[in-house]
Image 1 (tube, rainbow, N blue to C red):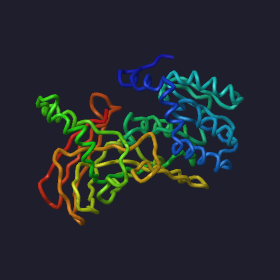
Image 2: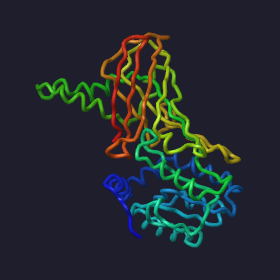
Image 3: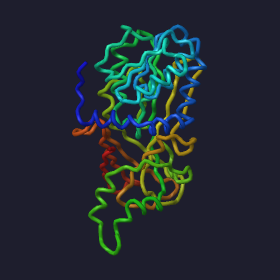
Image 4: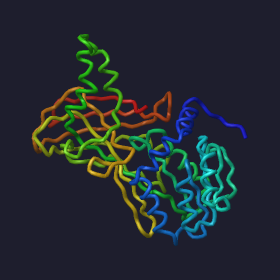
Length: 327
């Protein structure tokens, strides 16, 4: 079977070849146990069903589904890790129940015309980075039976304002004096690059705002480019150094629902949070309002990257505009 892999696809799939990234995901107990609970606690909905695992990686979700009573599970992944997944499946005596196919979801031929359930761990940093959701939507439209299940089925993106003087100084202020030299021209590059890191709950100084809800039963590829107005209320008298974005995940259309968050107040996940530093620091007072708008779209050059623009004003002050590339 021939494949059409451009550079962005090749780089993306190759990044999942090494076992270390799968080790990190498997050791993320919030992620892995949430999926296990959503499957094992709903065995009645998996019994005798055909399940498709999109981007199956090391095969853990496929094996959860098989152990939950699925009639058959098809796992699809383009990265070379699927060769190890086959060995793992065999080592656990599940080769007769799980078929693993190496290739792009959009190009492979499945052994079933339709599937009853789609499971996938498609979320990237900032939720949409790497554009794997596009592939899940393709699988949904092509293979899922009417009334079939998607796990998970809802994702919500949130934004808050943060105080982050120490880390902002390390990332942005560093360029003011580099071994006695003025490197401030580099600041514009540093500010364009979001920071993926763990934000302490105490650093969040505003209310949160739900930017976007993605219902996987109805969302389309076009919906993954969006704009959202937001309003944040300041909870402390402090200094605003930037914004933090995270997401929550829900398994809702199962009998026993499961939820997890990747936010600053939640238990650690490998997704951490995404920080967008402002050019200027802003002194804020309890009760102040931050009005903003975020625009999100795939990068034109590499559609697996994400272009993000945040416009905002503090307490009806001057308007500021920030542009980032999640790459």
